[in-house]
Image (cartoon, rainbow, N blue to C red; front, side, top):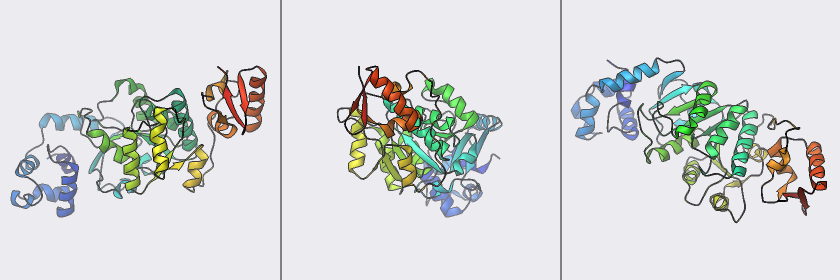
Length: 352
């Protein structure tokens, strides 16, 4: 007989909410599977009862066992001692999680970082810099392995001490989008990839809102870096609020469509942040913040950190990882060369 948890997870048409209801009523997967059709009828449709009482698909079961036999792969269940307590706080915790990598990261304090798939270069830089700084402060960075902001957040998290967790909307044997496969390999080796979806599951649209509830559910708060008004990142932020998590947003230009989602969140009560330190202060995080370690002699380091909008000295220090003294010296040299302009209020802007 297959593992009873795997038997439940592979029953077609029996979703997570139904499984939670069954486990609440019967107490264990063994008890659920040992119950008769009449007992199940109080909780499931006839088709669901039939699916649950039937033997799992042999090919699917064999594939799952083969996958679980590979190093670093495991199935986490609600009964496991290391099941993350943060997920037990949400209304619909996943009955099982397929895990690839360091599953102990799920028990560490985390922060979610999400944003646009079509991010600007500045948004990508901000996401990576914030993620690395927060990771170096001891927070694990959680995101969804999408293009743009998600990928940048994972890179920053992996570069720091806290590492990174990717929650995906497919089976763990399918990486979506395919262009993120190299990043997924890094996460499998040095971080963690998790999914509540069975192996072989395709990237269907309805899966991603379910993934989003886990990104926020695992996290103490969620940072939105760039988001259009109809962005899926705003769904994550809304769910985070419903789950009692903090929501943070980075402001941007009033002329950029990718700033409007963040500005809407700020109007609704999200915390406006300009540096990783703002987030750590809001979370009352006590561990020491280590800024991103970028070589001071990298060509155009400061110019790369400047976008079209006027930028403060503190923001530049956050983006570059330079000390204020080193940064001020570089800014002065660039200003004398006519490459940047010094503006009122201690702000700087690149001259195109």
